[in-house]
Length: 302
Image (cartoon, rainbow, N blue to C red):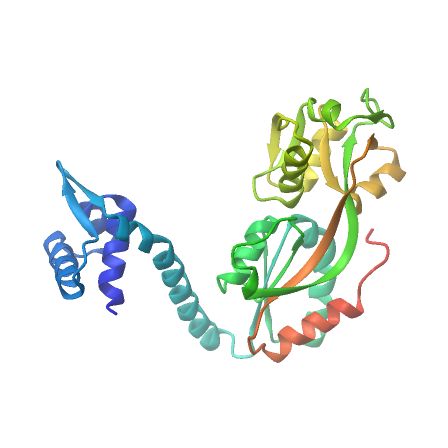
């Protein structure tokens, strides 16, 4: 299989133009067109066809785009792993964590790990839970620490996980909010303006699942932030409702800066998970980091 030509096709399909693909790849337009035509002829297929003054991707070509995207992503990761082998001879540990994990959990574990393995580079990336799993599957991370998003993942057979913490999701407001410490229905709380994280965050995914289960219209997301701390600060300021992990909320209840809303008939579990890829030989330091995490789980996170 000629991966070079498939890469040419991929960029033509992605940009919708041989000209634009030529600019990105620094290959002449005639060379791109000729190589794609030869590939099509050799394999008795058609990936692109002329429509008016432009190009259209054929149904077969459309089917190839997503697999090619994953293929080239893995190819890039192979290149980076080889570079890391030369740049970090003692190893490089790549951890992807959601905002809760990277702000409250991973800093301590990373510090303890570096005390034992000072020569191993540790790179920590903060993303939402969905993207943490994506990075793990796509070989961009060795370990992912994330919240259970409560729904099956497309490539769930490629990774495995173990539970680190278990809590629940809670509806929270400022202490002066009309629903603070009150019992309300799910329909009532869902009609309030919400302050939430971006799409892909576990809490937001679970909130929308609850709306579907309860057959209630999705709430209005009036403010959206890329971090849980920003979300909490906005709620504390007195506007709107949020849906967050009890691991975040309970210490703030004790401080009196947030209040829970008791939503009747609603309980939504939340687990913090550590994920690794299945059936893969792990470097010794990856297994040592996992053992360190298991042996240093705090009952009090704050």
